[in-house]
Length: 380
Image 1 (tube, rainbow, N blue to C red):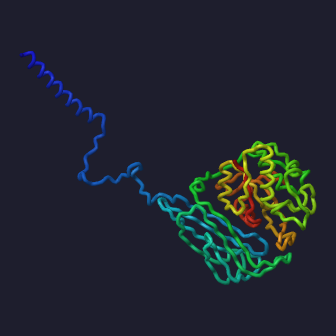
Image 2: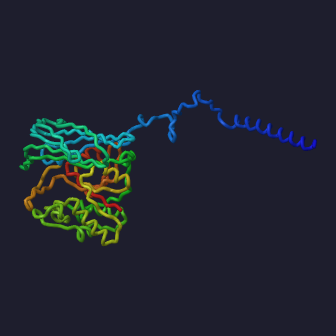
Image 3: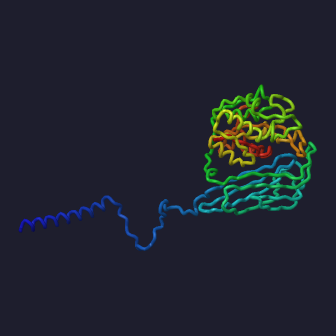
């Protein structure tokens, strides 16, 4: 009997010692967090966050801005400055845009409009006497949208030095609103091999750019073969630049090139014949943010710009075909956009008439718009 009592006492002593050790262990290995004065008071720390910053003071989810230019057909250029803001946790896009006229002479604009996703904002008569005449300003809240279509139209009656009368100037472009644009790196440069259009294609900058891009994607695309077998051509004065190359790229004279639909068609024919898995797309009208987004993903962009960026493009030839007016511009050149650098404010271009070079980003964006915002890509 005494043995049983002794065992029970021993067990009790062990339990007491274990409880004391456990209490001390908690003090040693766990932080000593004092209890809240009011146990019913909710914690200010957000589950899953750092508990230090409220959502309201975080930076906006998206904040972008840019410029859309009209084609410079005359002595006046429309300049549409835009900015978009999308706060965190909001489905709304806040868009502001201001329309300016940049002129070399005094010009009167009778009236005009800014279209935002086809909704019209009107403005009245304005006299423009130089760079930076504000025509209209608008701020708008948009709901549940990932794309904004912007355009500005000014009605006037002016003639350029070639005698071309223009009643309406237009600046237009598409803005893609998504997180990818807000996460662009500060700079990006594609590893890209340059090809010269000379000596065999003195006016074949468009098809040579395609040759560069296709070779970048590991196709064996000779510029002369592309021109001979895949590029549609037509006589000057009878050929629409959206349907075929105006003239022969092998000629140094009387050849005026073509626009993206022609190069897209040549590219897709070549890719199909060579059992490729890429597709060429006409993305004309894309905002320059979209172009930089492509470049950031290692997709070069063929762009219609100027050979000399310091010279504003002007009309050099005019044709009327099937009742429609078509024109060629002086100083035009098609190049491949392969890099951008926001810190240096430059872009990098592969010029088939020269070499790879950098140019001021704002100047590039201006000439891109003044030439019509024509561009295309080849991608999977």
